[in-house]
Image (cartoon, rainbow, N blue to C red; front, side):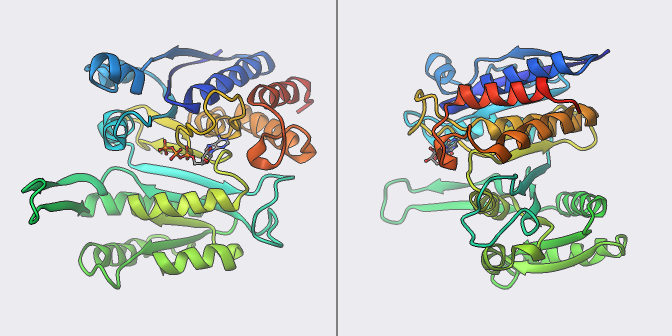
Length: 358
Ligand code: ATP
């Protein structure tokens, strides 16, 4: 019997709705997969917790999460709480506190889903974006002085370390090596930013020598947006800074049909701390409470979690169940052009799991 302890943090807005849907799918998977047990404990952290306690998570939050095998996260963000408070108080506190330095975002066109790119099929769009997840533009270094004065100054300092850049590049090369096409594109802005970005280029050139079997090229971030739209088939694995990869992966999610589909893994690859899994989307307060949030991003996130736990068979079964539902295409939420509810999509994926012969 393979048993795992999972910490669920539903968080804000539709985060709570899609995590609840994900937990239902996990139950169906346990029913389907002999010997798999996911013992889930939920934590009520997020913006409502902040309104009551003045903080986004419990003071000893990291300590309480430390013993879990994985964290299954929804979203943090609320119109009534400043974004930098919600982001730094929960998601970034966990990513940085647990050194989850590799943020991995697959972007793939699922069967039956249409890309807004004309003529783009699943054979042309199958990427993984690797985002540096602990430093760079999100290092938190900087400050504000002379507040509200005409000469006020605001500084956000991007901090890149040789250790941080080397380990994310090695991670991306290793990932590219395991994929059929074995391609890696390094994205920077090293024409305009001539210090740290050039350091990325230099370290890339050094590390590349150890991965002769991977075909690796470089692209400036602005040119990369064009390449993603015009030549998607030339891309396989992409590695970029915290900010650049964040922006590129939202574009990637839109190109694969909806931001409601895309998953993320925040990995501590060495396993010193638990890793965290979340859909790429935010709290989406415009649709919160309407019961129409697409839960597929949360399900696919579960697939990444199971792969990380070493449950490749269960991960493949869940992914196949999701793909059977998208291929048939009659039970999809409005963001994918359908009129189904979150609950109907969840039921369809559970039925697909339970009814399958795989
Ligand atoms: P945050 O500030 O937390 O990132 P946001 O509302 O600015 O939240 P998203 O939550 O990513 O950003 O939402 C962007 C748009 O995509 C919204 O119109 C939202 O309704 C839509 N969207 C996001 N996730 C989903 C989903 N799972 N299903 C359907 N639509 C979604």
